[in-house]
Amino acid sequence: MIEARLELRGGVATAGGVRLLSGVDLAVRTGEITVVVGPSGAGKSTLLRAMLGMPPAGGSLTYAGALARGPDGYASEPADVDAPEWTTVRRRLVGIVPQAAAASLDPLRTIEHEYFAAAHRRSVRSGAGDLAAALSAVGLRDPADIARRRPNTLSGGEAQRAALAVAEAGSPPIFLLDEPTSALDPTVAADLLRRLRRAVDAGIAGALIVTHDPRVAAATADRVVVLSGGRVVEVGAVEAFFAGPSSSEGAAFVAAGGAEAKRARPPSETRPTLTIDAVSKTYDGRPGLHPTSCEIAAGSAWGILGESGAGKSTLARIIAGLERPDRGRVSLGGSPPGRRVQLVWQDAFLTLDPRRPAGDAVVETLRARGLRGAVLAEATLRAATTAGLTAAHLERRPAALSGGERQRIGLARGLAADPDILIADEAFAALDAPLRHAVSRRLAVRSDGSLRAVVLVTHDLALARALVDHAIFMDQGRVVASGPAEDVLFRPADPRAARFVASLLPARPADRTAWLKAGSEAAPGC
Picture 1: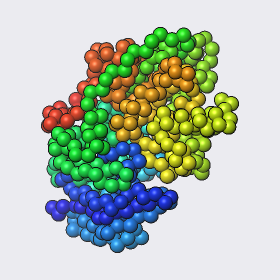
Picture 2: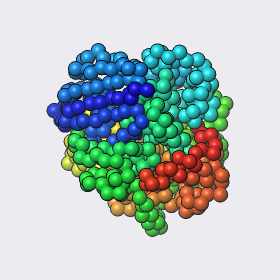
Picture 3: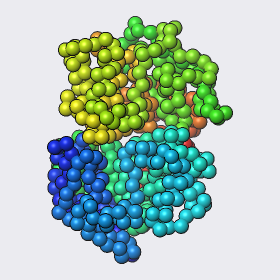
Picture 4: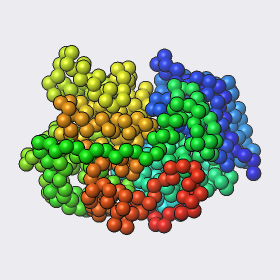
């Protein structure tokens, strides 16, 4: 079989007068996984687009050379971004999952329509059996139901898995995957990455993975490329990279994958407790959340974990007052929480107005609190700085920001409200690992120096272990484990929570062989 290959030489990308890529060389081929890492805004997603001959939004892309070769002997060298060969490359050779997977799916099409359209583009005939197999392979429990649904009816994890299934339609030899596990729970992520690694080892696929997660790199990579400021600052074999990275960015990435210091338990607070009293919710006659109760003390840190579709986001929206429960109530000190509870949304891109500077979302929140003039400007910059942003980020439109930068705008907006309770629904998934831990630790501090309660809705077991005091584990709309984080996240008694904890990806490449052999003992949930 001829080796499939996708190569870019001397890639230069600019947008808004800013150079996003500077002379980058990169190749992807069957039999190898290349993982691209680096801080948020380094140009990783821009590089992935450039590999497809696509300039950044509102910008330009030039390169010294490009090569695309398929296993069937097809080969082309597109001269520039306008070359018609790029259309053939995208349709025929490459399966793509962008960072905002849900936004990449046509909202007017069912998943079934998307899958068959992708297979048709690759000149492959597929039937209902192929679709069911593809959806089952990415861990969706009811393929027939998922196939008939549109993206807006899916959870974040379900949409990401549907996008992965669409990318696999027709079995393209090259995959370009931007944060492919960001919305997936550990059990599903582990199974998907094992399947990809085995396909690559068999020589039938190659992949470029953009990730902020050191464990994804340790579990999958043959080669690691470190990007910073649009330039490649380090390239190396994965074993050598984890043993001793040569760049400061690489060292920060590797260090972030190690054990994190546990969050200190907060002092007692005089602020009221959030009470969740037997709240439940159904959708079209199907239970989305069974009766759930708990009390979240001021200044504490809670984690809500579980597989995709377990009901985590439903519970978060009810706590935030954005969705009414069918039964039960939520109160803060005996009164409706109102604006004292704020939710940072899972998909930051969909919550920002594309026509306005991203910082307007922060400014409007502060104005709603009555801030004006110099006080408003100072508070805006303070919220941005706490979220790891600069004043320049606030002036850009959402499309000009990286996924991690947009997610930090969402965090800054939540902080600007200065709530008693801040709920972060997968709000760190697009942040690089060092920044993710730094920003998440700042969230608990209110403007007056006191501690607010923070609720992390997350698939990131390592982050939850580092930050939360108490944890809830959910499965199919039910709380199946609840208590101190040390019990729920390290030694859970419930078998579903235990499987979730056991699926944590390896921290070092040396542990990969044992992890690959372990496999998945049960079908992952949705």
